[in-house]
Structure formats: C-alpha cells, structure tokens
Amino acid sequence: MLDKMRASSRSFGMYLVFGALILVFIIYFGPGSNGCVGGGMEAGSPYAAKVNGDTIGWREFEGAYANTLRAYQQQMGERFDQTMAEQMGLKQNVLDQLVDRKLLLAEAKAQGIVVADSEVAAKVKEAEFFHKEGQFDFGTYKEVLANAGLTTDRYEADVRESLLVTKLLSQVRHGANASEEEIREEFRKDNDKANLTIVRFSSMQGDAEAAPTDAEVKDYLASEEGQKAVADEYEAKSFRFKTPKRVKAQHILVKVEEDAPQAEVDAATAKLEKAKADIQAGADFGELAKSLSEDPGSKDKGGDLGFFGPGTMAKPFEDAAMALEPGQLSEIVRTRFGLHLIKVNEVQPPEEKTLADVQDELAKELLTAKKAKDLARSKAEAALAKAKAGESLEALFPAPAEDAKGPRTTPSAEKTGSFGLSSDYVPRVGSAAALVRAVEVANAGDLLPEVYEVSGAFVIAQVDERQRPDISQLEAQRSDLRARILRRKEGEVVEAFTKNLRGAAKVETSPELTSAGS
Image (cartoon, rainbow, N blue to C red; front, side, top):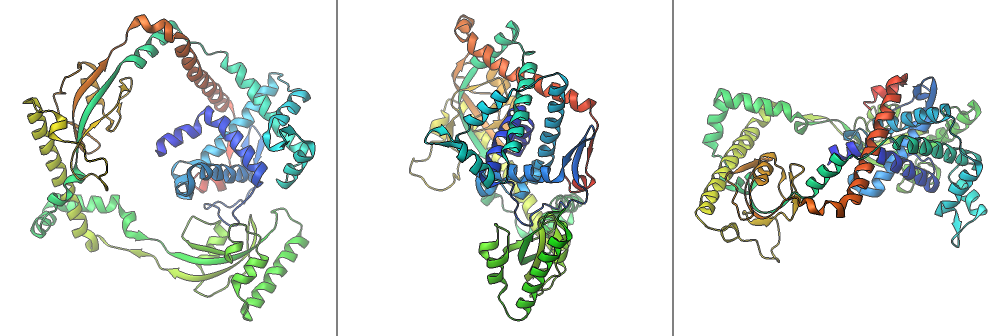
C-alpha cells in the first residue's frame, strides 16, 4: 500500500490534487500547526530549499507539509499518522512539489505566458466556499480569507500562479499522442481476460499443526544452521526487542513568531514564568493549560500530549522533555512554534532484550514458519493430484457458509472474477507471474498443471472462462482507448518535462531538512 501511495504522491495527477487539497485546508483551517509536533525538524535556517537562488521559506514548507498531512488524515483517518508519513517519504514529496512549482512558474514566465485579471476573478468565483445562497459573495470571500489569515491580494496571487502552471502544463500536454499500434495494444490488454476458481493453501492455516516440540527447538539451537538463522532473525527484527525511552507530558504553549520582536518574546516568557511560579505554588498544570495554552491540539486536554519518544516532537522540545523526571517542570523552551512550559508526569525507561533472552522464541517462530510452509505445499500438491483425477475444486474445498464468522481456518474454493492478463496481478491471489503465464495459454475448463507459490501461500487454479481479443470489436472501443492512452501519455510528458527542468536547475536543500531524514 505504501509503495502505491509513494508513487501516487509523486505523480502529476497527485500534484494537482495536492494543490487543490492544500488550498481547501488552508482556507478552512488556516496554516495551522500542532503546537509542538515536528517529526524531528527544527528550523535553524530561514529556508527549506533554494531553487536557482529563489527561496522556499521554512514556514512555507512547514505549512504545506502540515496541511498535506492533515489532508491525508482527513481521507484515511487515524491510521495515517506521522510514522506512515515518514515511511512514504511525505516530507520529501511535499518539498519536491514546492520545488517543481517554483520551476514551472519560472518556466511559464520565461515563455511569456500571462494570466488576465478576468481569469483570476473567474477562478475565484468558482470556489464554493466563497458562495452564499449559491452565488459568489464578496463579503463571504473576505471573511473566509481573513479567518484563514490570508489577504485577498495574497490569495489572488496564489490563484494567478496556479493558473500560470495550469496553462504551461496544458501546452506541454499537447505533445502527447496515441499511435495506431498503441491503440491496438491497449485493446488487446483490455480484452485478454480470464476468470478462475482458485484454492489457496496458506502456511498460516497450518500453524497449529506445525508447532515444534521443545526438543526440536533445543536441537535447532544446537545446530550451526539454527544458531545463524536465529542470530540473523534477531538482527533483522531488532526493533521488536528495543523500546526507546518515552515520556508522558503536558505543555503550555504561547505562540511567538520566529522573527518576533524581543519585547514580544519577553512578554511571552514572563507569562510562562508566572504560570510556572503558580504551579510550583500549588496551581494545577492542566487547568492553567486550558486557560493559557495556544496549542489547539492539546489545550482542551489540559496540555496533555500522551506518551512520546524520540523523533516525534521538535528537537528543543524533545530534548527538554527527555531530561525531566516525573513531576518536574522545564525551563522555558523555544521552538519554531513559540515558547513552551513542559511538565513530565511519567517516564518509561528504554528496554532492550538480548539475543539470549529471545533465542527460544525466535527459534520456535522460525521452525513453525518452515514446518507450516512445508505442510501447506504438501496439501496443495495432494489437492492438485485429486483435481487431476477428476474431482472439482468446489467439491474438494466447498466455500464456507454465508453466515460463517471469523477468519477462514481451512482452504476453500474462491472465484477471482474476470481480470485482465496485461499485468501479473490476479484478484484474491496477488502478483503471480508464473500463474498468469499459464493462464495465457490455457482454455476454459483447463486445470492449471502446477502448484504456484505466491507470497508464502500455495495456489491451485482452474480456468472457468477465457476471453481472447476479437479485433472486429476494435472500432467500437477506439475512441475510449485513445482517450485513456492520451491521459496516461500526457502525464508522462509532463513528468518528463518537469524532470528536465529539475535536472537543469540548482536546488539546495536546507541542512536541517536533510538531517531530519526527509
């Protein structure tokens, strides 16, 4: 899933979605922050990147990243968190989008492309969040922008830039075309299909039967092969046995801009110093946080941030929190979000289990996995032999009752549904190149001759339906096929164009952003 998300987040379709989503989130929520969550980033320099000497400010990057993260969370819910964002390289993808935008804007201006005031006005009036009773309303327009911390001039400048990029990309797309050969190949892919009955034999279904005895575990650990396999497994999955120090903390945030005058910084510091004195005199930290804190994410919870470990908060905040003992208050801490007073309520010390601590557990897991896989393969081979002797897969492995609850614990016959053979993906099976090659030469009714290993499971299959391309139907589909090819090739042309711009550009990334692992 993450690989698909990484790829889509870099595509130019996603580039346009990115722009639209972020615009909506800025309008509705403003260029918000979470008060202290920084994924380990802290701006010591005033820029995130420089593109041919033109600066992408740190605040611009931070706002785009925060709003992109929020957009993904809006779409995917709680399961999209900072960890998933890091795994898909979201920070780098956001920076790439901003760099590409700079390059495309510069190129549009170099080519003399212009956007008329009337075009900007028309685009602004299209946005439904500026409408009142179904019509554009100037008062609503100003109010929505003001609530987001934007002026009309700034917003209209952003709209003008977006239209410049759109016009440039429209010109670039004109270079795409669909040849007759490509249309015929697309037709072949669309109409080369099959529908299978498959039975999967998963090693997971045989875990109970595959559990090793204590004696087998002991013998395995005594062997050179077993010792090496267990050591390699421990090294590969060391994260399972290492828990970093974590703290449970509260904080009070007073927002201060990074370039705020010293008098403003001093006033915020005095406010937090008084709060600290009140807490030391017996005031409740949570109640003060509710009344004083400017962090919308934790204010109503009395400043509670829950447990967090390394790499979650802005670096100065993390360093201060990790140095505190339970019940202690920090000195005033400054991050790019402002000034913080932190209280740590609980500390979970780091823990690491040694190889000796877990070798029996790992040996048992490895032996179980091997025995379960061998058992699944044997069952699949036995089932294939019975099917070759004339028994149907549905009779051998009937589907569970419709009202059956819980996960399937035994193999059952399943229908893939009709699918194309233009890729190696088979529904209900996964990527199975060898299986697809066998289907290509098979006819309806054929039992495929082998057991196919797919992602640790073993599959046998019978071809229920086999559709091959009928060239006489090409003309009826030509228009749709051509349109689809053009959309795909337009994206490829745009990506190649932007890649060339980037290759010729001088792009310098902030050391702080590079060191944050983006």
